[in-house]
Length: 386
Image (cartoon, rainbow, N blue to C red):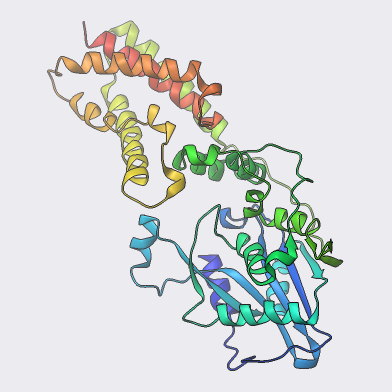
């Protein structure tokens, strides 16, 4: 919501600002990189924009591909289904810059070494792209976002003159590992992403694909060549943020889920000693986990969220848990329920055994939850038999 408010306040109506305008010889085209912050999940990865500065023509615009609004038809329905549409917004660059500075987010500028003709090509493309009929694009978290659009605009306008060199990247990260680099200050956000997004996130990223992150747009342009020479002629550190201090919180997944595991162990020991299930606990836990599984299955099969496909979290968040939990309330449980929970206990034990070699990297914070489910499933299968 804060992002939308920011956009609403910042976006300017620059009527007839630069229709068919020729840039002067003193014009500059820059890549702007804004730092991340841990205050909001959407801001955890930073931001990118293109600046066009021409003092002779009184132009100083930031072209930002990270804009969305709620006025789109069926916005919420399309968002849930994975049809995410963002658009190009054109801002006053000083306002754009000052917003990020006011939120203690660094601002770096890379002034590009372009000819007058190349600058005009980029500017004309941006102006065309900023028209209402052209400004909307289909957003993808990792392949078509506010950072990759910066790369793509320059690749589209400068074509074969531009050469990306990814040899400076020495790591071999997956897309999930790249997102993890930025989410350590936000463990709950990291957990949510790791639960909802499946196997496609565990693809090894090529150097070109690293550029879904604004920082890697900056690093990559430091190594881009245009007509066999570096494209960046000057780097300007507009503002360097003060390092954030992440306060300690007891509301951390390790503490919350670790406490849940201890409660589960204590309650299970109590149930085993008295040979009677605390069914209220199992109904609540397996219902919640089952409905999580339903959500993951719908994200995979009923939406266009490509990154949510083939989700191995369904090994523990099994949708049928929601049905099995309700059947526990019956005085006489169906006979197959014993075998169901016995099978689930075996499945969860197997998942834990192969946790670190599964094709999809499961979030480590989930281990106490999976152990808890395994303990209760094993206990249910044993006590229902008696």
